[in-house]
Image 1 (tube, rainbow, N blue to C red):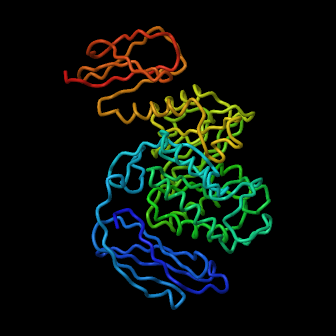
Image 2 (tube, rainbow, N blue to C red):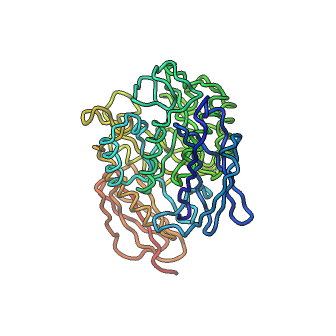
Image 3 (cartoon, rainbow, N blue to C red):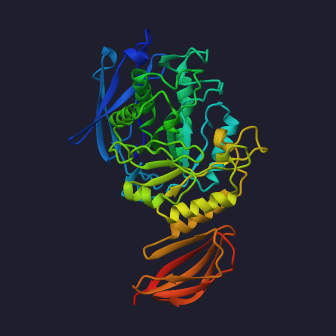
Length: 460
């Protein structure tokens, strides 16, 4: 198998009682003098699995550890080869930016489809994957738990009554389906930003407040199933501060538990909520168990402040959605969304997309995936191309909604620069004649959504 692939052990064991709660299983994987322990899980019908993501090339061995005799002390070995060209390993936070484990830079261009896996609609899910493959998006925010009004055919816990689920037992059918979609995203090179909790249960299923012991058991099962996939990120919650059943100390505990259970140190964040005219209640992202800042805010201007207060990557995962619904978070124009993308990214952050356009499908993209119908994805693809082309010595200045007739640029005093005018909405790049030094005055066409790119072309 290849580096950062998934090694899986499948074992037969006891099916009686409650194996989810009563049987413990893990495997100790060894490479040279290093041992990494990965927890296993019960997958129903007497089947147990352990999944592991090896991070080094060469020979590995393993030995299982269990409180059940027939699962304990089993051993094996396998060889790990170099990663394939498209496999760069898991994403890590590096300063205020991101990079894959092999050092390749990663620039998150994310979108949101909270419940795209919950209806078990294979045709729509395949269409979602085709849409993603043709889009600029390389990260997808998605939920594990259903929301209160939903009645999907399968839910994470055992039981058929939405109000009486057995939270000590998990539903293998649900989780096999979920992990298959995570693998599909991995094959497309898309990071799965997995949202573990939220406040939207409404009391129907009691998953808003399951209690600490059940929360831990749930985390153990989800992490054992998904952590070996290199494209997984953990989001402890969506709009954590809207959940009145949990305190900040509870969220601290959840994030510490994720960190403890995940042997691969996948990215960890927690997403805040906002209410109109109120200041966003940001979690204290300086805490060591948070790897990056996942922020909801309609104004990207404070990006620099957030970076100065906490030198970890800022991902504005929600800045309102391109849409036409009545909710204030779901009715900005494509122009407004693209403007926020450029503003946030030229301030040093990363920005996320969402689409809530009614009138195209039964449910909009942000809820259930399907197709994208907005004007912003093509412009976000253009931005991604501009950002990925940027090299050392390149400076981007975004002019936003202002419409000046000209602008004077102060250039770095280290050589000559080529200057280009970028129309971010019409997706054009127009060179400004000449090689410029120290200062240049650029005439503008008096329209909004323009940017300037300065690229170093020679030393002084």
